[in-house]
Image (cartoon, rainbow, N blue to C red; front, side, top):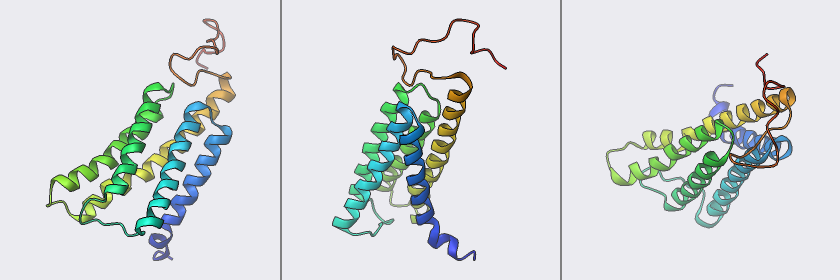
Length: 170
């Protein structure tokens, strides 16, 4: 049974990504939808890249196509994190920064072992999915408890409730 886990790891991550993206698009507000869109964009672009250039992941040297996908995702996550009225988006952006910097580190040093590159490149994605799930759960809990709230910093339209009303700590 334990030998099946490494073989199913990619499939389990894909299923988790698709479920979290669907939940983010369905039950989330603006930031949750934006993060889900970036995850789906990364998935689709990496699948297209794999169809065109092959599914081989090179851990001995930098893969410029995958590095470009990670760079685009890093920029998108950073923009979302800086504009969203959520803390978890900052963690997702920081983890994407680690994943992108793995490509830079691989390019700048030849002494980096392939396993270190794999951990830095692939490892953050597991934590990103976990954080996305926790962020979506926290958002839904907050909406159920307090009602709608601003999705974006500086957003107008959803006024904060009067001082001392439903925002009190219970």
